Image (cartoon, rainbow, N blue to C red; front, top):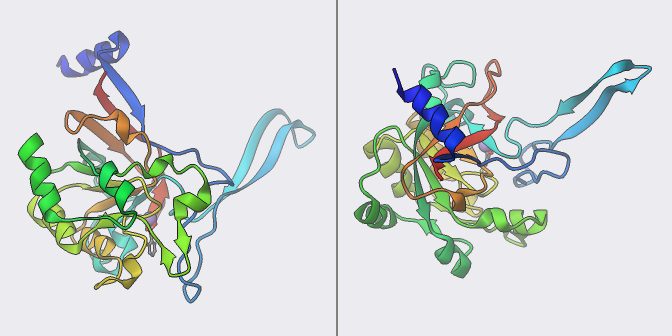
Length: 258
Ligand code: 23J
Ligand code: MN
């Protein structure tokens, strides 16, 4: 079995690189704001337990509190009502094989520069496939929008008088990816896997409804997608094994040709 020793040798030689697709996680991490009629998800708070002091003379550690869907995070099927009855649909029960797959990176940075409410349509996926080949079963489809360049939290969330504005997927695109291409899930650079205006769509939050309604996953607040090729990388995205968890902050790693 040489594939694993070959993998480590390629990482050591620099033929392959590890790309960290994860944003820093801390009190400054932006969190999604839903309309005030819905409960809010708290961001990160950290409290020192001890730091080489009288509470623990030789050790440093913290208590952290946050919503499950904070920062770079994983959406499990049970997160949405459409995915609530699938077997193995929560953080602690998903088959771990399903955390790893080839990455298909769809670059719509130019479109999003022109239109911050850009919605990915099935035609865009088909055009991408003409150039790069058919999305294989079990892939992570990553929507590269350039949105992670928005390091100012206000620009990242981009909330206006009529709500948030950020790119996302059309319902029919989510259906194509989930049902026909049988992906693992989709990953985005924005705070959630639906467009900023998706609460007004029919159905509301169609990507969540469709992905999770087909037992697929979501990855939100990714970065460094510009360091990945359109195809040829793999992504490892394993959430914390939270019992009955609907999602989890996680470290998302890609292995790509250098
Ligand atoms: C709940 C309701 C709407 C949305 C979300 C959560 C997320 O984006 C999320 O983190 O899953 S859009
Ligand atoms: Mn989420």
